Length: 156
Image (tube, rainbow, N blue to C red):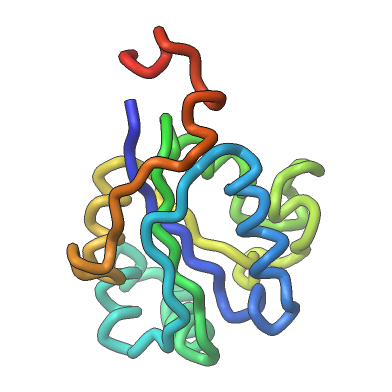
């Protein structure tokens, strides 16, 4: 079953010029980019996005960091995209992330960990709506889509 998720390529990802490398991993996996934009995260957007962390001690630093430089907001679509992208990204703390994951290969920080990925279908829907208007998302079929899944998998 196809679903959508939000990925943010955070300020450190852009500063380190890793955006293309990381996007390529998602594309090679077979996910479609259905929305993408370079943007500055305002304090208001940051507060909305990180609302569940407001009482945590790292919250002020988190807001300062995510608003410090541009991010690339990406909406990806594909089969089980939420859980697969989370596995591809790796655990939050880069120094604990498995080699082969994005954070395991490129990050040693717990906060400057390159990417944000929605952690559930519900979060993906909520977060995508924070960063994208409905008209900014495109529904389309890639020319290789017949080669990504078997016929029986397309109906699961």
